[in-house]
Amino acid sequence: MRLVTRALLLLTTFSLVFLLFIGRCGLRLDEELRSTSSSSQFSNDFLQQSMSPDSYYLDLLHRREEEHRSEIKALKDEISSLKKKVSDLQKPFVDSVSVPIIEPQPKSHGDAESARSLECSEYLRKQVASAEIRHGVQLNNEYEIVPFTHFTFGRVYPVTLGLGKRVVEKPIGYKRKDLLEVFVRALDVINRDKKGKQRYTVDDFTEGLFRNEPTTGSHYELYFKEKNMSRVYHRVVLMRPFGPVQTLVNERVRTSKELINVILPLSGRIDIFRTFMDRFAKVAIKHDKKVFLTVVYFGDEGLHEVRVILTKISREAKFRNLKLLTLNETFSRGKGLQVGVQHWSKGDVLLFLCDVDIVFTSRFLERCRLNAAPAKKVYYPIVFSLYNPSLVYSLQGKETPSEADQLTISRDSGFWRDFGFGMTCQYRSDFMNVKGFDEDIVGWGGEDVMLYRKYVRSNLVVVRATDPGIFHMWHEKVCDPDLSVDQYRACLRSRALGEASHAQLGLLAFGDELKKHQSILASQSSSTVDGNVVDVIEKPSRAQLDHR
Image (tube, rainbow, N blue to C red; front, top):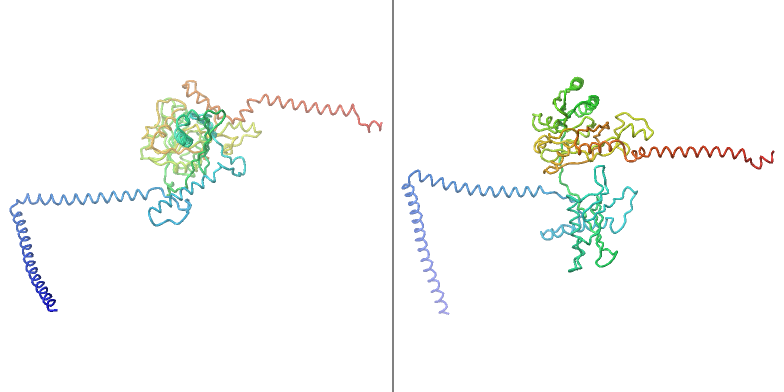
């Protein structure tokens, strides 16, 4: 017990001595630190005193410059981070309503990704299940059928034909990319378990079908010849299902302040121009009001009448937004439009390149504003071209109606002029950027196609759509014999297509045969009536004989 007590006393004494030693040493270290800091401060003061003022301030500026550089770098990093966040926010937003929700979204990142993948695959499975591929779909009538298009490796036979399209064509552009991807996919599928000579190649492909069903997707059927077997085929059915509808733009568009400069090249045709100005006053000046008219007239003949017509419209409608430009040279539509565009000097403006035999409504002018945007898109409406009214209505046994009543869209009244590119709405800045028209083209046709191709090859969006608010009035077309071969052929083609529909032209072509058939029926009918009368006279009934 005593030994333990002594040991504790010794340990306590040793601890106290050690603490006293540490305390004293610690105080000396603090003093040394103070002395060191004071000496460094003294050295800095000494250095400042020993350096010249210029050197000292240069060193100070250098330090400040380094600090500014570090701050600039930090700000740049922050700006790049903010830009990345903005770009992420500007990505297409997917409506939650358009994507079917299978289950609640998990909290973890990995589970969220798998849930989105599950939703997408489930949606695609629904698209495939609802498509008319493995089973038929009950439709209301024959017009709801979506027909297939037949294709081979190098040819497509389109089913949706306009008057300006070919009945057989090579797959180009997006169509070629689409069919090539489908073709490669089909080969991958059928060659999955085959090796060597058993593998299918391009030479084994015979034909295929495809169609686009608007709500489910694109359907494809491809047929390959079976190896070493006669009249046996390998059939592959593929589908490119459409995804859910996504919201890309949701914005308000204001058109009330957008001025349209209507540019009209003209040479002669005074009566038609007078009618055009009457319609222009009713539609553009009275209802739309935000329009400017630029008339580019070629030659001296008829120039006085044009001035009188414009002056009359200006006074009656109190309209000052018009300009008459004159060119004393051979008519060239491209040159006239080019001069009209270049003459405008009030900044950028929306242009409507027009013709004198065009009729348009106020709704068309609104669509002109909606479908064109500077440095973004240009509008090329597909015009509804009216047939020859004296021919069309006479074949139907009707009187020719007034011009206003002729503006109807039907199979017997006209056709969509899908091969014409003359009517267009575009901004002056875009027109000047693509260098406008080719002024070397003289006479009729060609200049509009060249301008259209410039936009097709640019980065601008070309909005090409049927427009029920713009009509091409029928007029007698005379093809100038001085035109080039291509221009003359295009003129004759346009002239033939603009007379009447195929069925109506067929009635004209077989008119003599139709009259002959009608005369035969009439003669047979009259002879039958005469024969019946003779029979009654020569062969009385038994009752009549008994009576006699």
